[in-house]
Amino acid sequence: PFLDLPDHAIWACRAGLALLAMLAFLGPLPGRSQDIIINEVLAGNTTIAPLVEYPDYFPDYVELYNASARAIDLGAEGWSITDDLKKPGKFAFTTGLIFPADSYLLVFCDSQDPTNFPGLLAANNLHTGFNLNAKGGETLAIFMTNANVQVLVSSNSFGIQVAGYSVGRFPGAN
Image 1 (cartoon, one colour):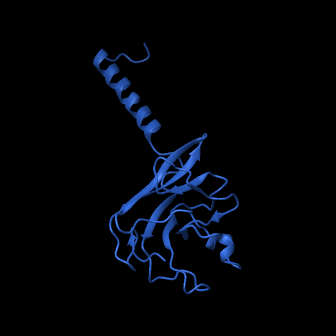
Image 2 (cartoon, rainbow, N blue to C red):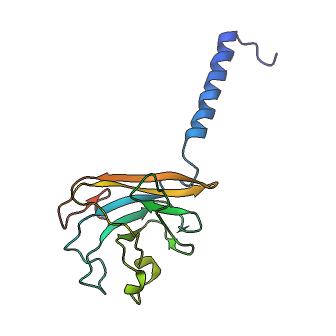
Image 3 (tube, rainbow, N blue to C red):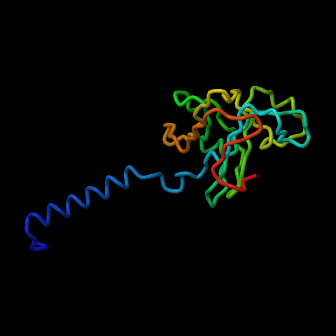
């Protein structure tokens, strides 16, 4: 034998290796885990106009944060956001929408047609097609596609929101 170990030591080694293999399998996808998080949520917005060009536009919104060190093409990598965990692809990002590393992105939670906002860059004109529930709260989630399976990456639940006040994770975010 290669090593002359007692049976209990061999079984302990095998159990340790099995545990390591299981943790590696259950662990996050390399380079993908928590790349993008839901940083801030504002539901029932009546006071904050996030677009300087449209001072009378008060949408509900979600602020995303790219915590990774790489730019992410949200559409090409199959990212989506939803307010219904049973419908992970409710709003899928389009290919070519690049989310720079260590930056923030506002996604408007309304059913506005992007053509109502001429002159805005695509990254400043994202509308999910669903509104947020300020009176009862809800859960928002971000998914990405991996091998044709939508995988939950980040979620954030919020309760009743007071108009003009958001719920956030990181202080000092934009």
